[in-house]
Length: 280
Image (cartoon, rainbow, N blue to C red; front, top):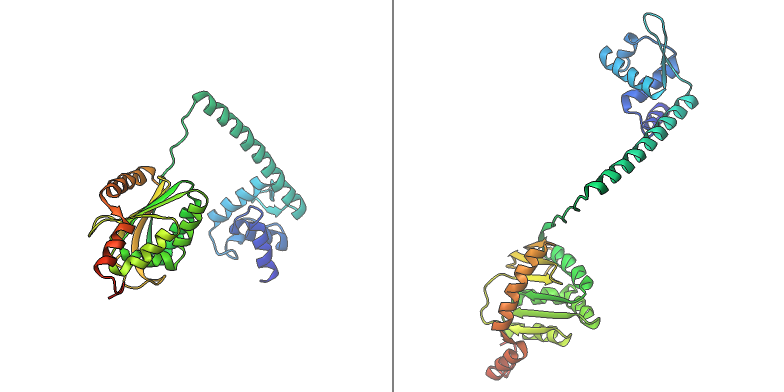
């Protein structure tokens, strides 16, 4: 960066726009000028130069003559910058005074605080889903619940959600889940049970899949037909911190919970039916 470009950059950081900085530097370098000769070297029109000069005069950085035609001279740099600082100080004090007046009026009006605007976000793959669900589980204080297909239990195990659930349970929280317990998912369901989760079986469940965190926020499935448990595997879920949506899913969960049976009972039945191996 050459010296002039660096000078322009620092002047713009001091509150000038680029046109003002270039014009002020030209007057500093080449001395007082009328508006006409300034237009061509700055690549603009005379009317634009007049507007920029007026702005610089208001900032205290350019001084016009009383002659005709009017000649414009750059104010000494130190004095010009002091003028800008002083102007900012005056504006800041005025803004503080207006702020106090507005606060006073607001208190007199007794405005109601704005309601929180819910967040809605589409999660597009397994990585985004687990990186959203994990912190929500860890920050939960009471309970997280879920309704998931057996295929999703593997992703939860591989990418840390099971560990997060274990930490929630260790600090006194609760984890409840509903899934369709099959032969191929017995080991994963047992893992969820082993960390202290309360898991139930709903035979051939094919409804909405979701997670709810402390009845405050939730993640619900749009498309979770995953074929591989990889972080970049496409999947679509909707995250929201809308409590109304969370409570809707919570009521659905409680209904399913009542209609389902303990996963341990289902696992026992499957093993009795096929005792030789879990994965035939």
